[in-house]
Length: 276
Ligand SMILES: Nc1ncnc2c1ncn2[C@@H]1O[C@H](COP(=O)(O)OP(=O)(O)O)[C@@H](O)[C@H]1O
Ligand SMILES: Cc1ncc(COP(=O)(O)O)c(N)n1
Image 1 (tube, rainbow, N blue to C red):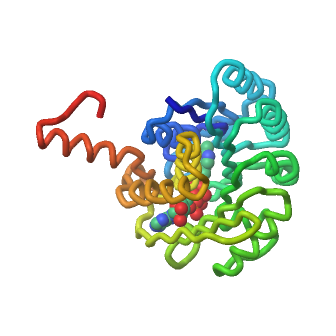
Image 2: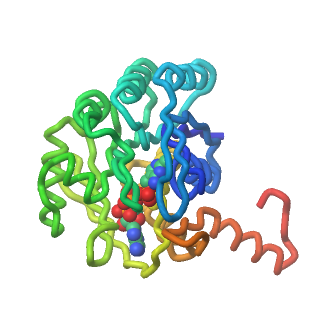
Image 3: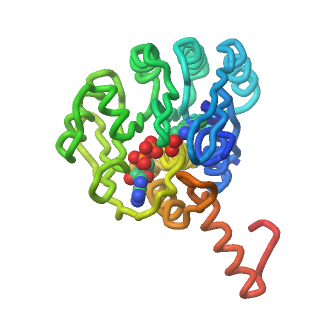
């Protein structure tokens, strides 16, 4: 079985963070593991509190996994502060896994800061160059580059700036566009476009976490970066289409919709087996 590791924050309402990543890994048939960087008290309405895990404990979790288990892909999400970023960078340099997807989480959809204001520089300097692909949303790309994004052309300009900062591949996600969501990939040579139809729902808690961990799952299974994005985009689209109106705010996506559907179909034709 292929394996994937998420290095991220815990989301108590399980729509984003570690919980979304693990659900995504398992929905892809990949063995999922987690290194927790912070515990958030969070629901669909917002973040009530954050307690960071010590950098030393983050390192211990990473050592525990990498000294024992082969990790086929890593997804990095909320890192909270400079010390955690330094520890994660040092350990990823040491263990050098084949595939690293960096989702540079900065602010939650509910508007709460998830990365200290003094931590951006070290994230870009130490961690960005180690990663296979970085997947900022539009507000994150704006913070990273200082380029205001109102159009596809602005997204392309930002991709180039992030490439110059040392990223190997950049996927700027279009969820925050006012039009249909187009995600744009740049590898230093050319652009690829992943075009979606906007789904009109308020339940988009954890879409970025889910997309990046779906990309990591597909990389773990041996797909190319481009194919991994195509498949991840299909997965997140179905998860948003069938999102869950749980809670009073921004609800979660439905990570297991396709699996439930398959089980129900098999039940209907009398072919239900335990493995589904
Ligand atoms: N309303 C929507 N309809 C369809 N796709 C969406 C919608 N919102 C986001 N997406 C897709 O979900 C993925 C995550 O994007 P985004 O929401 O921008 O990330 P983040 O959660 O980091 O803000 C992208 O592939 C984006 O195109
Ligand atoms: C622990 C954690 N990690 C990431 C996010 C971002 O997700 P979103 O942008 O959908 O709020 C979050 N809210 N919480």
